[in-house]
Every structure is written in C-alpha cells, then in structure tokens.
Length: 124
Image (tube, rainbow, N blue to C red; front, side, top):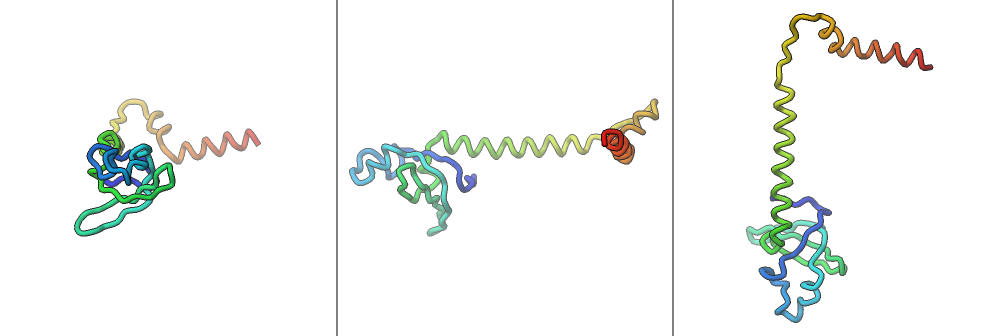
C-alpha cells in the first residue's frame, strides 16, 4: 500500500511510539492527524514523514498508522483496480450490429463529426 503524498492520515496512539504514556510525545498523541509530506527508506523499512496539524513533522512506519487509515488506502487501491477492470471489459465487448444499417451509420465517428459541423454552421 503506497499512500499518496498530501493525503490525510491518522496516527495510532495506542500502538505507535507517540502515545499518551510518554510525556515527551503526549502533545503528538493529542492531535494525531496530519498529511504525508515525504517517504524515507532506512534499513530495509520505509517511513512516512507526517506533518501534523500542530506543524510538527514526525517519522512513522505504516504500521503506526491507525487501522481506519490503513483500511481506507488499501480499499482505495481496490476501487481503482475494479474501475480499470470495468473499463477494460467494456472496451472488449464486441457489438453485433445486425438488421438496421442506419444504426451502423449513426455509430460511425465520421458521421458524428459531419453532424457536429452541420449543427455548428446553423448556430453561427
């Protein structure tokens, strides 16, 4: 799951190092909402740089994000892939045009452009 830059996220204040038990990070735990500013790769782990609403920048892993944030971005990717699949399926449909030849004439893109030119000429 790759969260896009500029996306809003919420830090989990129970599992992360920024919790209420630690006095140094208590201010962060009180306002755990922020946006993704950058990514950093360190020692085979990818971290996100989050700018909180209190203008504090922190470094967290994806496991330290709240469950609702992780679910949202994992479902978002699933929706995009479903959307692309439906478009691909639609484009692969073969239309069977039998019977009326006027339907074939109307579905021709060249005919549409001629019709559009005719309409614009009348309007101007």
